[in-house]
Length: 315
Image 1 (spheres, helix red, strand yellow):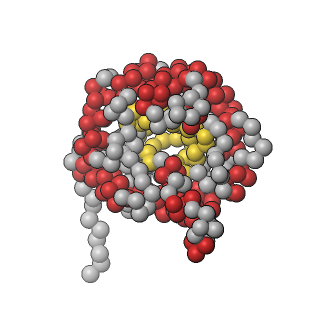
Image 2 (spheres, one colour):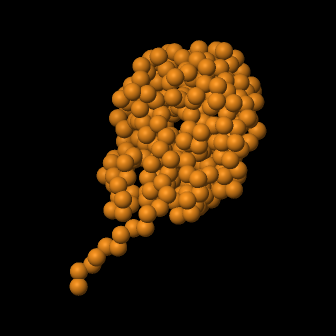
Image 3 (cartoon, rainbow, N blue to C red):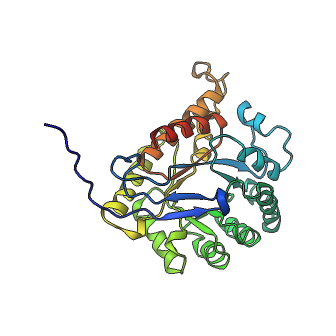
């Protein structure tokens, strides 16, 4: 007796969020089925891949990353190099120098750098802005950068419990940019922050969640289970407060763990530092994509090539 595939039950869909403008704009989300379940319903938008670039040069960059940016003297030149890497859908510019414990670059100077990078991209790829991980300083630089890039449809990562009011009011409401609420790997915290930001007047369809990340093996099961639960609640329970696409910044976690940083002299049995870092980045990215992340941020061209190949093969 031939197998007859049952028709899937209609469910809710993840919001579709557009980053960038023009023909090179990128769409995140929009799916109504589990990751890669294209046999149940059409998945219009595949997982998108961003490349991380810092406003200053990466310290101790491995050869594959160092070669990519060799000779580039500023952030504008680096984002152009990054945008040209095969498999890249958008460029993530992280303002590491803004950290008050480091260079403490002013908000005005950060805005000038962001504007130069945005102009250099010339719409070739959407731009995503990440802060310094200092909540107070990030609120300041996001305000100035959002104003400088008004009309660019830029995603700002992240708005946290400590600074969401300022980030949402400036970048989201005053300048019409996209906002990424960031929570600490907890479905209830993610939901609460989404509710708080939308209550301020930010359209839910302008939000892209960052529900937290970790390198594979470092409490990673909590990341996966949180994404699973959020997607399940959004699509099976039609929970509109969790129906935002998910962005996961993989690279900042995977290139900081010992597997990616321990020298070959200290760990001769572990092999190449670069190969280890790439492997860690790929494994982590593949797992969160399979769980439901709509976009990931990677750093190494080899990682991007491998993950992009996987996404395209399963699309």
